[in-house]
Length: 354
Length: 173
Image 1 (cartoon, rainbow over the protein chains, first blue to last red):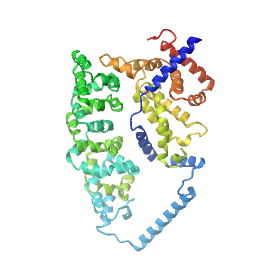
Image 2: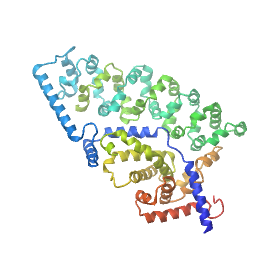
Image 3: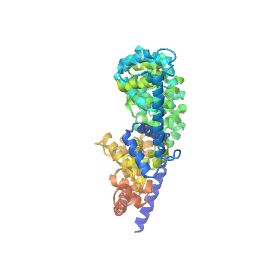
């Protein structure tokens, strides 16, 4: 009986200690979940939206600003009615007049893909660059590429993807040949999925260490990654006598490279649990073993771009990855007028109704 | 939660913040793998968000999302390495100068001892000692009567103490 109580107290102490040493979630976990939540919400069908809305109302949900669903309905009906009246007037009176170049030509370009769905109202009038894009051969080729269209169709319905794809920074960078050459590269695609790695690459020493094959090989080992997240281990590696003992062991080159790296004060960059846990992925290691790519990744402006949230979002999308490897898609993104054209109803109609 | 159903996505964030740690800790004990635990936790939140309109408000939110997380843990473990026992993975089979550091720090005594327990035993210990749930909450979360939870926890603790060498000498490994 006494022994049991002692056992219980001992067990409780062990469990408490284990709890205190518990591994934590990677930083940015909440943000990552919320990103996926937003993406999931964007893909809800009308039925799901309605079901959720009904559930909310059942629980007594009332939108604070409008006073309830009835008001929303009235506003929607009013807006539709007003739009119908305005369109009716525009149709019968021909006002407002069409400025600039002929809308007919723009419609003509778009009609190559869905003649029945297009009308002059589908084109954003006055946006010469958009019109020019819609009439270009680049647009023609883009619309004929299934993979490009599959992604554009998705992006047209997803405001976040749409914003990411038309980001001025992305479009400006793609105009640089070196970026255009790199962006469709499989290795880069594998790399962009690891934002922690891109952060760590800001550290010049870390970026240099990435040039060592042996170093990458050793990082892929599970026991090494576990050791690197251990404070005791990192402290021990700072002691000259310990390092000496390791050196005396005539270690394999990869261990020697790791110890060199640790001695070069790389421990903080390497000790990120989230980062280290990525190194088991063959795609990542394959990407890092590409010397040319690693050279690009020491380019601060490129790394900074890749580290943007929207870049990670785009590259995390399988359809985008398929699309970006299509010359037609990449060429179209590099054309002036892509962004305004993509935001126009004509473009959306062309993708959806083809 | 109701605001979230009404379309306010930001209202889901506090729910994630509140439950992510505890779900992850439990998932880590159930899967024995950092990556699996993280993925299971993340997938559980996404699935909970997608199915929020089906959630019965009479139940505690944690109990509901916990069941989703458990299913995710089981799916991930099945998908990853169906043939490999948890014990083997936590014990590791590496040799080299880093092994001692790795095992001593990252995979402590409790890890190894718990790895040898059945899924149900690991679950009750994790829920009680890591998630700090009451017996009633544990019963709701694991879908068994409170009485079963108590007896299961008692047996689990006994087995764990045995594996830790507490029933015999100081170290049974």
